[in-house]
Image (cartoon, rainbow, N blue to C red; front, side, top):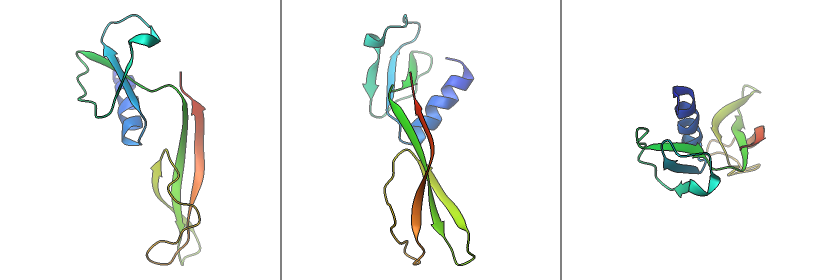
Length: 102
């Protein structure tokens, strides 16, 4: 894996994506990939990838008294819709990205 691929898979994991690993240097065969819950991140021994499927990224936002919508966080699931935050301002989700991974 090159540095770009490593960064991409680490960022996806931080956002909640499911990760798979296989021994480094294996041929490209999907049956060799295994799911990992908490990767140990040994890039010398293993290759890692985001589990193939649909990736959706949401921006969790809130409206404040200045009249603007502010981004609170980004994640790959939508935990709340139309809920109110503890300070009384409405919170929403905005879908930013939806792409199929290979």
